[in-house]
Image (cartoon, rainbow, N blue to C red; front, side, top):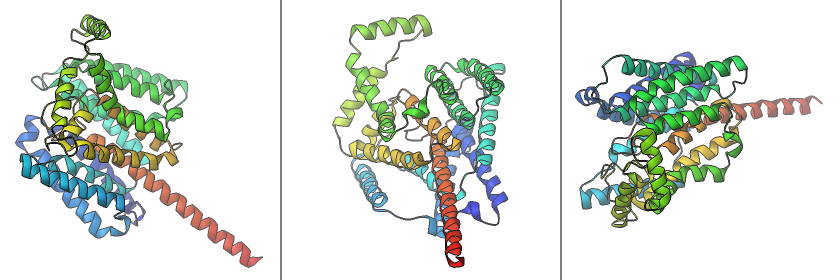
Length: 391
């Protein structure tokens, strides 16, 4: 039985929102001096493992070990053990964040909950940006780290407005977003600003994202960090790269790739040293690309498992793409995933937890809709049986 269907539903509903707030707090603070002083990341890891085990023990009927999951677990275990022995590098600080997804499954997700989560994320993120713009609280912080969490939060916030079509609300969303972009620009992250705009355009259907959401399209998006890296490396010594660099320097006072093309070449060289299982080091270099970081750390096998896991969750949710929560969250996750073609966060030795929360919410909403559909089918079958007996 899903926790959402228990007699304590109001408590569970509030608990999910509280858990999401805690996860946001972890995502925002763990790389900071505060996070390091209070060991936020390690504490979050231990608590997540304990909660996951509790879900397995007390809600075990909702958890089934499939052949695919068992095989993936064995491969990941082999990659981990071999790299610990061979390179003294462990990937455990990355793996645990995936436990957030089955934990979210135990809660379920209703539209009312998602709206509250979206508004809370938007409110907390806006508060951070206002503090950063009008006080010196974040002076000395890495602007990229601050802007990443606010970008992730903005996509969650915008995900709740995919059904908005009246002019007044669209105007309010655009005005809010314009102010948000202005505040975000303070932290000088071009990718966060660019993909925040992409999220807005998808939400308002200026970009008809929903029309493109097929299995093939999702695969292409999930592969986009690798495809972009390959494309950039193939043109980095051409006239086109020179033109783009000149434009970027004139516009942003920095090169278009800002050295990422060189980092990605180094990453490919490092990957070729152990192409199947990697070197076990998610912090080998700051590659600013999720695909390069993954193949270096866990090789081709680990990369395929990563893509397969993300694809499996989203493909299952596609059946309910007309549900605004599902569509909004899928858009949020895929926009974040594309942005991670040129940034750090989602794949790292100590990854940001918020994108995995988004994936977990997609899974939770999918399970909720499936259970409702099954209940409807059961009720309809019962009615049909009664009608046949009566007649």
